[in-house]
Image (tube, rainbow, N blue to C red; front, side):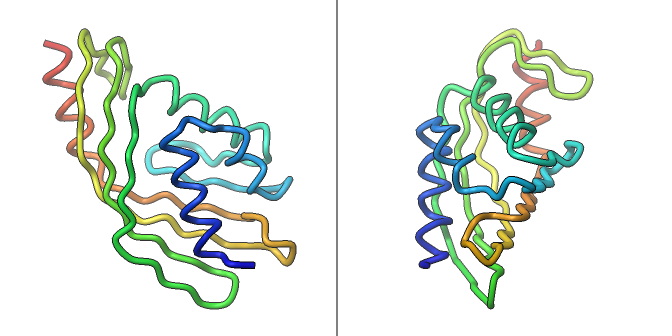
Length: 138
C-alpha cells in the first residue's frame, strides 16, 4: 500500500468535500485529534467532524509541502487556504460575512495493518482563523 498516495487522496477528498471517501479511508475505530476539538472516536464521529468542517467552509485547498514516512506513520506538512461561510461560530465569535484564511499545519496519520487510518492528529496554527473571524464579525 502506498501510504503517501492515501494521504494525498485524503487531502484531495477534503478539498472536494468528499466525506465518504475520507471516512472509507479510516478504520472503524479511528480516533481523530483536531486542534481545538474533542477527539472524534469511530467512523460516525469522524464523519460528523468532517461534515461540520465542510459545512462551514465553501472552499478548501491543500498544498502538501513535505511528507515523511516511517513504518505505519506518515507526517504530511501542508499549507491550506480556506474560505469560511458567513454565520460561522468559532469560540465566542460568530461571523456576519464570509472570510478566508491561509494556515499551515501537519497531519500525523497512523495506519493499521489493513492500511486504514487508525489515528489522525491534525495540528495547525489557529490564530489566523480566529483573527479572520473577528474581522468578519464586525
